[in-house]
Length: 137
Image (cartoon, rainbow, N blue to C red):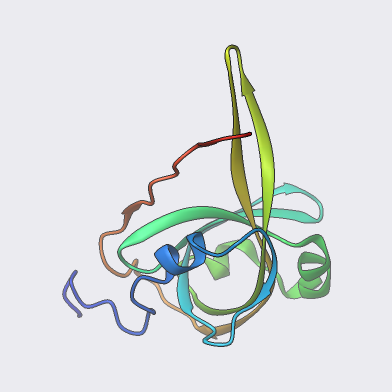
């Protein structure tokens, strides 16, 4: 059994790197390896995920087209803790209006990925990635 500090085969700091990408659709040439800590269906064709690089975790959603193409093979429980390579992601600004404050949050949409390995255990001891709110102009 590997130690909690052994993060292989995950890509170190992948969550930081993904978080620093600009808004819009981006093809990831490095195809970082992440772990899917959880996945749940929000509707028939929408899935919310928690992804990790072993250091940080963050929320994301599967693009509807990707969820539909995975279709019948998408067994939500079997994907938990699996390792995937991210190929294409999109960041979308989401306006969050709190009385007296207007902030723009960002939503990560996974457009394309491929599964690399099934795992039964969580890798590392990831903590929530900080989500700084940026005031809109």
